[in-house]
Length: 413
Image (tube, rainbow, N blue to C red; front, top):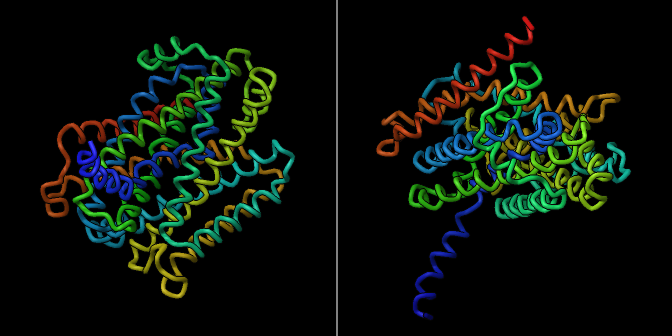
């Protein structure tokens, strides 16, 4: 037994030294905008969208795996490969697409911080200001290992939503049935929320982040098998959390006809229906998810822009050597913080709209990824298989069709 353990132990250590990108990237999808979106899905539509979440899980796993494979094979981030493969004009177009999506999401993270701590009576001027300061100090003064540990710690706190799901005693039988029973309402609110759910689960920034992250972590193609397992595990775990958020709000708020404006409203509304502890857990989960997103999104933005335009980047570099990298992070934090602190800004509109923008712009980024992943000159033997292409293209086509339907119903209905 000791000899078997001696042989297995190095493999276990190797696995834990490699994990991070898949779990962190997937969990970060459940950020402030994600929690708000899933809360609204459950509160306004019950379990009627769970079938879509089930399908999105496979799309998330496939698209994230493609990003990891490109990063491990080329040892470059997505921004750099787009520049090499498509030239400067298409690179600028891709970066503008990412910036529009990312800025809205960064604002949503600080809106989530403000909303979650307001439940405990903390002013948004205090919570957002401290949030910006803490994120900046950690990212600018730390190292890659410190940043990764913080990302993983915040990822663990998503378990509170699973605990919260059991506290409200939902009908799990009906929820499991809804996973495999397609249901759609041909209305603007339903389609808008559905696009937001897709956009908060499979994000444009997620494609940039996971690819840059494996490069910054120093991984290469020999780590592919472990990373593939981690990516699939991360996609499953993050949507388990999403499932419990939808089910818990459906079992309480939807059941009693209570409509909400954001995730903090969901937390407060849970108190009379599921108890004060459920409210605290929900609010705590929203804070942790918002903080994780506040760390990840500015980092992703800096990664992508620096790769695309050939600037020095990475957490193992100093300020003097990577001024553009740290400058982009600082600017993202300050701009987002200031927007959230504007008087009268509707936090829920910011959070939900940012996810709709993510969903609408996602096909643009995925088309770049699909062309790259099927280019033998770039990927060699690691080009996509037919099954991966089918799922990814169906995802792209599905979002485009939903966006067209949304525009149709918005204009003519």
